[in-house]
Image (tube, rainbow, N blue to C red):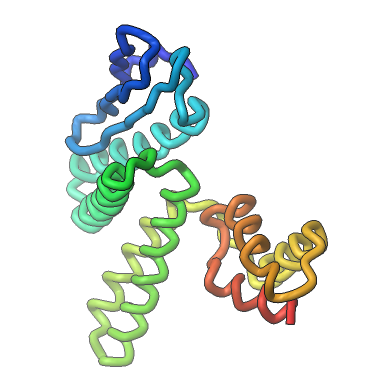
Length: 205
């Protein structure tokens, strides 16, 4: 990653002592910070390629928000604000635990969770005869999905689970955790991991 990118301000530590370095992500909006912790010899704990990818994702949301606001698209504006707020909340939580800001895999997981929450709400609204509110939830789902990878079909999820189990030599429920970790690492944002968990459990029993 180019350390001279114009949207990053880096304040290098004056010496090689362990120090926290603050780099603000400039997007025109407040609250989206990138933190790095430097070790001796100035080695960062976060891989710079990971940081660049995460910054690109955040740029997509921030730029999308600007465009939606200019176009007067109220639904897209409010949904993108909710996405940015959810990411910022997780950044703050991580900071309190001395963790790095969320990276791309975690952002995709946040988006996936937001989709599932809205699917559940839309179903509940439809069952209660509140069709207009259900439609609003579905409109938000489509906006969020614009930033997610193409979702895998059930047959594709099953095939992915089968392949992971074979690759890891998993033979029982005790191996379920490492199978799910491998799936999340390989297919971030591309499948419903709660459903995948049920499939993996079924295959390992």
